Length: 199
Image 1 (cartoon, helix red, strand yellow):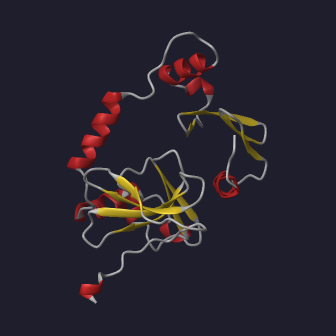
Image 2: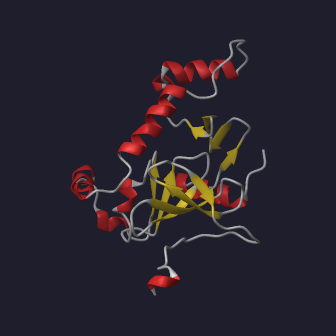
């Protein structure tokens, strides 16, 4: 398995461990081994695995049954929720305050914050300016530096899905993503600038 140096460095930083390695189907951190299913690192204790996770791990270990690549119904409902709940709304700031009331937000200064299962990035939106870096995890890659378009319809972010960081944009209503930058060297820190006509 070929893994970029940047991806390994990010994983080491996220896990707070230098003794970390990626195997074909698992992440090893020190003496702990975490299985990886469909690019998702399973951090649960094995006794807490869902029936589906146990089944997938057994199948991967050599059982003969064929497993579907993804659950179409879950993917469909999640995607359709994005079309209905596709914007950051004023009431989300109040929800954010309620969800994060136990977190000393000032303590996040200078830290990397990871939004796991970020969807449209609703919670990370309100962390802007409160931490060193926001990591959005919802693809089989590491996504950083989210920036919302002024109209709130798009999200730009840096992703290493191809092995090197590039800037992508995602339309929040449709979920459609596309690569913006191409060229030598990694690209990070997207920003929406006013159009030349608006300057």
